[in-house]
Amino acid sequence: MNNERFSINHDRIRSGMSRRLFLRATLAGGASLLAGRAASLFSAASGSDDSSFSIGGDLPVNRLGFGAMRLTGEGIWGWPPDRENALKVLRRAVELGVNLIDTADAYGPETDELLIAEALYPYPKGLVIATKGGNTRPGPNQWVPDGRPEYLKQCIDKSLKRLKLERIDLYQLHRIDRKVPMEDSLGALKEAQSAGKIRHIGLSEVSPEEVESARKIVPIATVQNRYNITDRKWDNTLADCEKEQIGFMAWAPVGGSRRMTSAALEKVAKDHSITIYQLGLAWLLHRSRVMLPIPGTSSLAHLDENMAARKIQLTAEEWKTIDALASQT
Image (cartoon, rainbow, N blue to C red; front, side):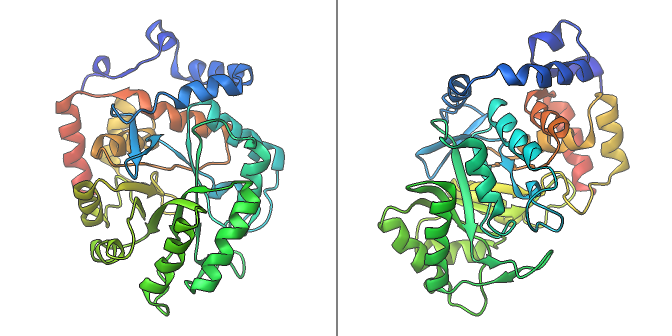
């Protein structure tokens, strides 16, 4: 591959500024971006180009979003050790053009939604906050599904209050509770949708068969499954989402707790003077038009690096080579 065929489309990059200096300049200039300017970034998500996707056919978002889970304390439990930094990360994400932020009532629990409201309310026009319910947090690193209709109704009302919203644009069933019929769990979400409390409904960590069963109960706008360049367990679910134009929100898009490891992909990234994580995010955006990666971080520097992946451009032949390497991981 040829380094000269790789580009990040930014005037300063083209004028010779190194990637590291670009990131420093971007960080330094972030404070000057006002809410009105951020709102203008959102308006670019028209659903008419490869950078955007319309959730449910009527909710345009920029395809590279932000997952807010990592802003909580250790073990996804309690408040972050540096609360002000968490607020800065959220605001910086919006400044960089993110208009899809994913969270859940179980992150903290509750603290993640409260941080989002503290950092961003009143929300800029076009900002989509997607939250989830149906997975409880009895302690650090513990997850216990609860899909009882009465519990989910309570979750929705509490999320609305914490996020200071009149309606949640995207509410996702965090996990299917095997002890509760899917019809009952999704019935509660459908009822809330009819009442105007939520706009669109999504699922998380589901198979194509589960998506199809759910769609017989209520329209499904998104699916959120673990997916990245070295972990493609849910390729079949992605294919189903592409067929039905369902947004596929890839969580752990750069590996999460299971680090992305591939000597071949590391070499490709190095050849293009980027990280394997940036390559992985760019690959996801290249992989499918319905793909909505939601990388998360508590670091301002990492956030800037993640968002720079939107500008990575490779030739069709280079992507073909990378696709072949990815299929071998």
